[in-house]
Length: 230
Image 1 (cartoon, one colour):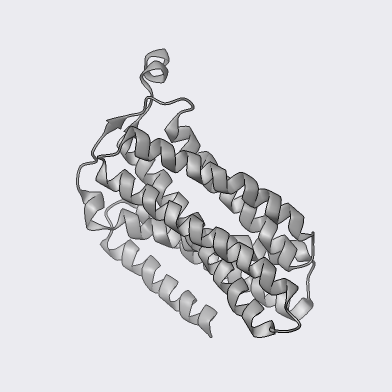
Image 2: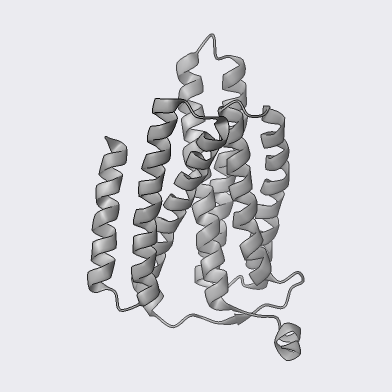
């Protein structure tokens, strides 16, 4: 029922963008969203009916996260602040903040895949734990770069702090989910609640990293040495 409701909302979103948007790429993004939610429904239905291998279930989980991040990106692109001129700043760090902004969501998506693989029995929890040890410092480094280089840039500062706060909550929920799983026989409901909260916050973490990447690509110029070389 929830999936059907989301599908109807996505149809409405695609039609609204087609009717009201002058930007061709935004109209295409709306239909890409609709295609993603249809494919998501097909994968989910096949998984339930045919009990397909874990790889299909992991793909289903990752596609859901990508779909959610895309809808969040559409919210950014259609916001009032997006119509205003960007507050351009110069990227002077090494490695380039613009490059790191693309790497970070990629790492987070890989971490999502590892978590889904563990939940569906394709691998042990250690791969997901090791991934968290890599991803959490990566988030900290990118956000620290943003806050250090551009402390007075309101959009970048807000996006970086939001991502940091969500990531902290996600790490704590991950620890809680692991401990709850150890006590699953004694309190199965607690394990379900904490695990679902961990998965949902994982979606928020990925989406927040996408928003930060969008704002960095929009507001931060390439480093001067790269511009001169080009």
